[in-house]
Length: 623
Image (cartoon, rainbow, N blue to C red; front, side, top):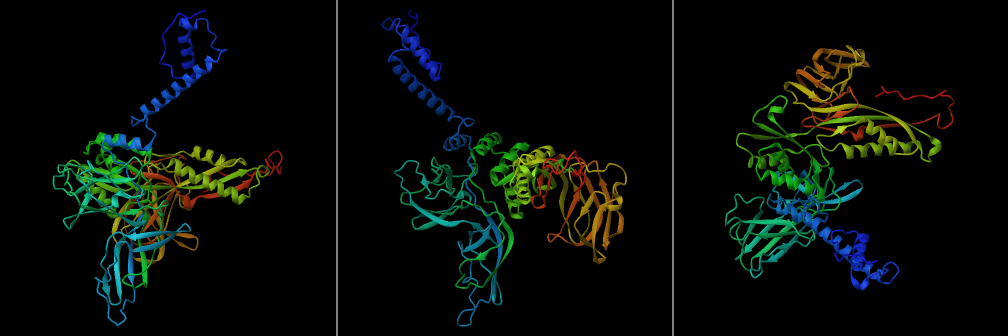
């Protein structure tokens, strides 16, 4: 029976629906009246048409999705959409460190000594470090003149960066409209490029433009962006937004090729080669290597581009500050911003920015000042940005697990290593932001799931926070954990120091005894030293402990030195609950160096125990 229809449905994009629509259309034609499409060769042609239509529809849908930032999946399209919002994704960045270098016993063959000009440490001088069993190359970023001390030449606070120097040269041709110059290496740190333009025999250095508000027709600036192939390309002003180039001008670009593996954390460096022919050197590390990172991910671009566009290159709201800080310091692992009115104590007229870099806990003073100066250029005059260190609350995990030895061929040591790795992965996956929460039950699940032979586990936690001390100054201190502390009753554990332990320190008037703090369970902080294993209390009212607020207050005291080499004291406490939350500028983070894992055979599961006889349960109060 013929179908009385000659309409073709075009809204269905599924293969089967397209084929059915084509058949229904043909059945409505007089030529194919009562034709059996299912049992004829015509069905093959219909399927072929449906297949072509389906492929075309899918490609059209994909192409349409790539037009929008939220739905784009291909990097070049995400970068292009972000460019429409004025956002330039961060490139790879090289790891950097600061060192002090001493060249020893420097003397010419004729007995004279070279001048400090002769002994300049040239840009590009190589240093080598061995980190995690591999060797990495670092180079000096700028030429450094030494100070001379007899036969020694000293170079202080020298910045070295991981990678190798490279240079590309181009010739400007004004016959090409809107010329762009693509660097020959893909992995380039845009922030460390040096661009020089030689015109009529005169070389001038151009700077990277990060905004147009201060650019004039004669500004010597260049622009840099990521092209469709992922390479960095640069271009210059048009005579309105930046100085235009002339035909035949020579463009030289010097840059760092970023290594694929970043040596963040490296601290031992050795001079590779010589300085003016001399090689007897000693390197002292000032700061560990940090800052190495890959180019901005697609997910990060999508998140930051909209925030950047909302801020419109001005700083009014807290989100404006957060977006701008992430632009100025793309190597940030986490950023928190709060107003001075929310600070403790309140400081009105300020905005506080806490920033934790990747692979490091703190920014250097130089990095803080750089971020602060950039923020000052855009913030309101009445508001002063303050870049502070993230206060890190370390979580100390002591884990005991039970396992069925009949369900695994692994040794107890191998299982302990697996559990340790699982705890570290839990830290990486869950505790990398200022608003992160440590959820105790999720950690227990991660441990149980780490191996099929593990039947149960008990993980106890403590909290540790480091407090910097102003040595030889009489001063009071406060240590805030942001979480309530354990105090089930007055006088809890007073004879053994309550719930507070610290690292040692020396006080004025006593250079012999190492002092410590503990508490009496009633809110009093006590200071003591050890005589054998006996605590000799020097001050039973050295401060207070607010268990409800999680705050330790230390009365004015003159500390002359600390056991910690960085003039700090570590405070370790027992929290009231097992879940730990980060507040304000605090970060919670599992101290991976202090994870303690112990495995025990489950005697019931292994058949060694019957009816629970001889089975030892793990105490939940052991730390």
